[in-house]
Length: 83
Image (tube, rainbow, N blue to C red; front, side):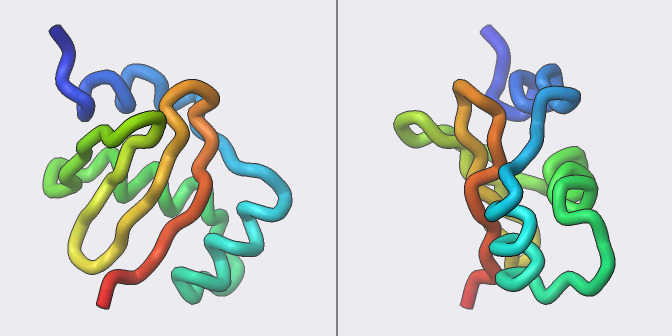
């Protein structure tokens, strides 16, 4: 049985977001010019990133950032800075 971390890393090439997602992630994380998908993938791949699944989503958390990824479509839904 794979862990959630192994499963999401195995599907890393499938991870993407929508046009609206690009803007939402940039705004929520305060990214200027950086590719939000690449930024999120870097966080997810980091060994410190904790990943758990709840229902249809993976929640990837590291430091003060939480990224929500749909498990079926591998779409990054949103990302937030945690308070």
